Image (cartoon, rainbow, N blue to C red; front, side):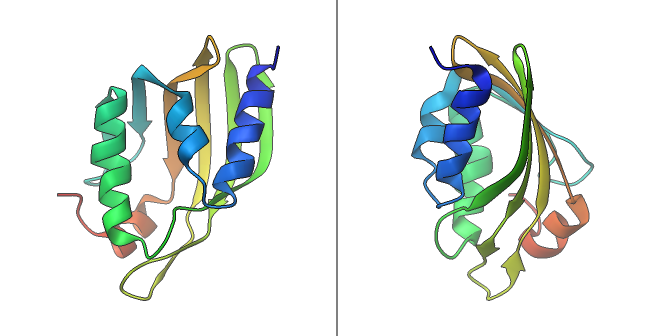
Length: 132
C-alpha cells in the first residue's frame, strides 16, 4: 500500500508535466483549501467543487496552456505531506507566472482533505489581478 508521501510524490510528478488529473482525482469531495495571504485569491475554499471552480477554474482562464507545478522537496510525517514547488507557467497576456509554493497537505485514506498554500501573494496580485 502506498504511503501518503508516495501518493503526493506521484501526483506532483504529473503536475510537473502539466497533468493535473491525478491531483483532481486525489482531492476528497470535502477537501478544504486554505490560501494564505491578504489578496482577493486568499481565503478558505470548502469542497472539491469550490476548489476546482473558484481557484483552478479562475487560474485556467489566465494561463496560456496547462498549469505546471514542479516539486523541489517533499517531506512527510503521518497524515501530513509538505511540498515545496515552483510553478512554470505562461499567462495569456505574455507574462510569466512562476510562483514559488509551499503546500501543507493533510491526507485521509489516500485523499487530500486539507491543503494550506503559502506563496508570493504580491506576485499573484501583480500577475493574476483580482479574482472575480
